[in-house]
Image 1 (cartoon, rainbow, N blue to C red):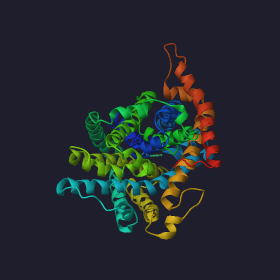
Image 2: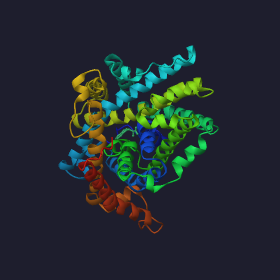
Image 3: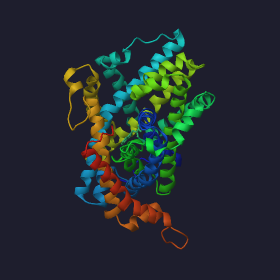
Image 4: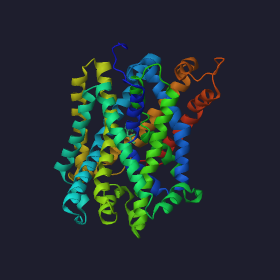
Length: 461
Ligand code: TRP
């Protein structure tokens, strides 16, 4: 079976696809607003520590499981552990449905913002009436149509397979994304707000960091690196034995972090460059990406007619490479465990996800009881509930089981064989021992701290 398995056609294939999964709405939408809420500097520093000390080791652990077994999460856990451990893989598949069910709706908004920007660029800017975004959210047909459009695009790529679909798409989408981002960063470097942005992001002041910020940083590290549900296991299973896990994981983590920070630089600089904007942002930081920015592009920036549409292509592309990875986890499960063909697996899983997406899409004001629905102490609405469930419970739990599995149940020898962190005399390097210490002790302890914080009532979504 392993010989017939599709693999990344090139070394860069895994890196681009995995970076594509990691870089998404988490970087462009969520990170800028939670960093804003947590007052910048100190939060950024704590986040960097979480990414390096916990994110990177867990990413290596997930890739290791996939690369070694050459299987998708459920059979991979079963092979290295036993049937019981397979449940962790199954839990990841379930998490995939939950995340895709709301992520595709938010991703759909980027299509609207893009469309709106194109219209403004062509026919001139007209200020949207007060409350227009709220009306759009409550408009059932638009929400359903846009999220479905996104899902169809995702399914189209997953349908084509690993090397011909996912890898090809990542090889096209990621360079375009980097190019647009680089252009936007260069543009904002000349804006007056750049100094204030740098100070906000990179001058830590720990007295301004809310205590819950530490746990929020850790929870977000999971989400943004696509950890805790088997994406990296699945993508790692298409990796050839000759590739270095450490190097690939390090590049993905670096790119993801860089892009989250650059997204902040772009957005904050535009905001700081407009007098008075800072205060009005604080009221609704969540709306920063879809409400405030489009307006600023056209009213405050020279060249906004170009920057506006480009920026939302960037958001849509980033979201697309993430939804692809989420769907691939589900599809690879159907293929490996239920022995389905890739095409029928893709159609079936997309239909189930579409069903979840309908509920999320209708929960933004269109249908009363779905918008007010509230369980697990989350925020009202199906969409927020799913986000709350995934970010606060499912990903940390999935991550916890993964670290315990790799740290305590997978042998040291097997891990060393996969990571190949040995010196000339064949002994494990200092960094291997450090990795193992973090996987066995530090990462589980940190995740348990997050879970306890959630139980005590902190919401990371
Ligand atoms: N990491 C992506 C983002 O930042 C979202 C994502 C894709 C994800 N696949 C995932 C999150 C798997 C958790 C698990 O937008």
